[in-house]
Length: 316
Image 1 (cartoon, helix red, strand yellow):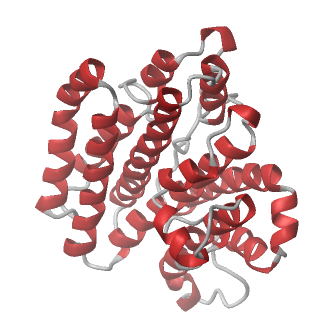
Image 2 (cartoon, one colour):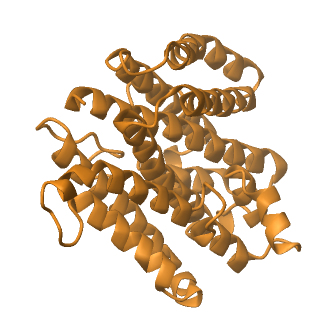
């Protein structure tokens, strides 16, 4: 497969997942501000912007700033609008390997964004967040139903899996690092679509340690960090099989596989209590893992150019 097409598929997976997860995070954030009048809005907004890689002075942070930066900024691939637009542009360069249904879904989503933005400003942003979640699910559903399980599929799912690790870590960080401005664990579980699976698994009230454990370590829930790392590692193993055939018989064939495998092994074999005791450091480490793995994938499989980064260089 041409490296240009492979790179486009990788970033389609990342951008669509990024838009989906950012919509989930913002939905929880705005819902909290409406439901709890005692929340310090400036502090909550400043914390969220910092966690999402767009810090600003606390006195300038408010809901309007959050939505402008993380939802409506067309120039930033870290915003919902920017990520979906970037996904559509990458799809233009990979149409020969994408089904017509996937291209049409991305194109319709992109063309509907101005109207969705107008409605969000007039009636509130929740309709936009629901639209983004539904359209993202449609894109990946169509990919599942219409793409052959070849290298193109592997790059798409690899991108989605790495982005999901990063974004789930960020969602957990909104709870762990925000102090008394943090959302409840129930809201965090709802933001990841994990609330009902959590209740079916533990059959009891939401407990902070169990909620963190579920989102980090559950093997069966597809949005957990462990499940996403395992999926990314599987994709990289398939992509690296050619190297094994060419005589690479020791260790793993690529640096990205090594980085992801080391992170997955740490979660799998370290005691849960030890992970939770240093949770903020583990979450930060997971975000660095995703950045390093993405750079390694770029260097290994794509053309020689600087990798596209999640957050601006120098951001906190």
